[in-house]
Length: 273
Image 1 (cartoon, rainbow, N blue to C red):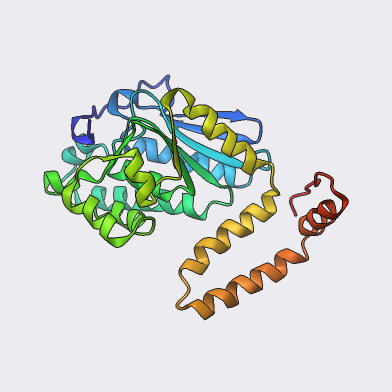
Image 2: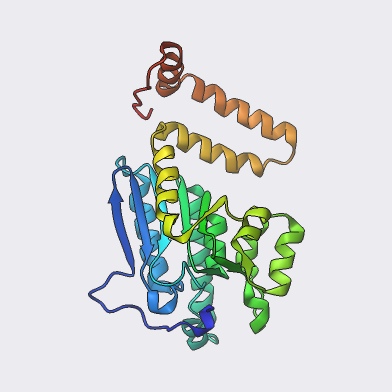
């Protein structure tokens, strides 16, 4: 199933397009357009952005999980919505800018973001997986950037895809549009690991809670530094930048606590600063 087959109508007004479930320090955001394979309508993207913005400064949330309701994770843009506005240049421009902003918000978010993938992740849904910091998928999940099959190359998904997998693997996906297995997604570097579908929630929860047990200050500065050093003009500049960040991190309260706790052979007590 791809987005071109998905229904364009959002769920009824008394149902939210995005479900939020706070499970201790881990917040689950579930795309809730199951009849449309959770395709990214402008309404759904608005809700995702709202929750990402709200969670950025929420001290109770330490890790975010993005999941999908129904039979699949996300089929990409809602192509019925796109088709209905295809000749409306300002709408298409705003929609693409909205999606790009949302994807960058995931990368730039202070909290680690994990994609929990089942069923399919295609086009902008695959972009969503690539934009997350980590991804765990059911072992029968499928991935694709199938725009080439309908004459619409996956230009914006390729930005995230090309920053996660090798060039030749990215081009294989973009040029063929074929569905890729979860095993190949691990091999390509698009996702971290797979789990049996019946054990997927447990695998995601275990990783999320493991990360949530760390200092949120350390996670924030570390995630930011990881992505920024990738954009450094050369290796020397990357090391200069990383060294500067590490110097600041080293004098932080949680670094002092962590080192002392290691010496004392006790669990650290984080203050997230």
